[in-house]
Amino acid sequence: MGHMVEPTPEVLDYLAKFGARESSEQERCRTETQSRSDAMMQIAPEQGAFLGLLVRMTGARFCIEVGSFTGYSALSMALALPPEGRIVALDVSQAFTDIARGYWKRAGVDGKIDLRLGPAQAALEEMIKKGEGPFDLVFIDADKPGYDGYYEAALKLLRPGGVIALDNMLYSGEVAAAKPSGNAAALAALNAKIHDDSRVDMALASIGDGLMLARKR
Image 1 (spheres, rainbow, N blue to C red):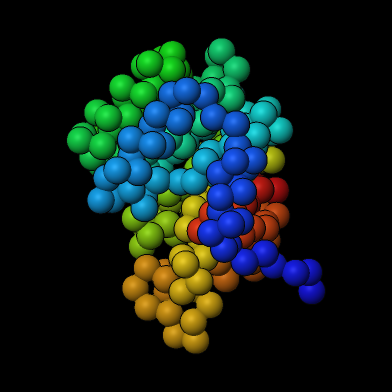
Image 2 (tube, helix red, strand yellow):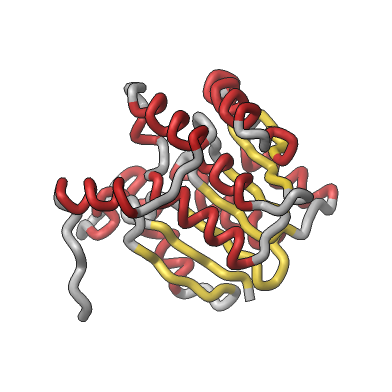
């Protein structure tokens, strides 16, 4: 088995230096969010770089984001999208997304982002009902018990070959416990489900807090 790199402070510093290229607005979003007490909900810059690269590698034009927080992940994807590209961003918080809108506008990508406030599962079901899509990429980073429902809805909205990326799927290692509980239990169950799901190709990568990638067959 290959050697796994331990995320020591030195390795994390190295990642901060070489793991991503950030625009000035990405850096501003990241650093200002780091001062918040709930900053742990923000993805790492190398995750943002990976999402942007994923957009470019897959040729994605139409994306969905479930959970926007202060806007870093949507910003990372929007910057990588072609001019006609669009992201449907779903979040329940007016307060968080008011902050996000500021970063998106200053970065000149606010026209690419269709923000819809309200419960994400209901929004996804409404999108399915209306026949929206097909979409190329779905990024899920929201309430952990809701992940399974978001995953199932995403599969209906994706084109064949489209990708779902789910954040926090290692949950600080708690998913590996003998009897995980709470959020970790929900994520561990979904990891096992995706692993055995013949509808997708998959890989669980140790990027950030664990990024599950599922490609719709």
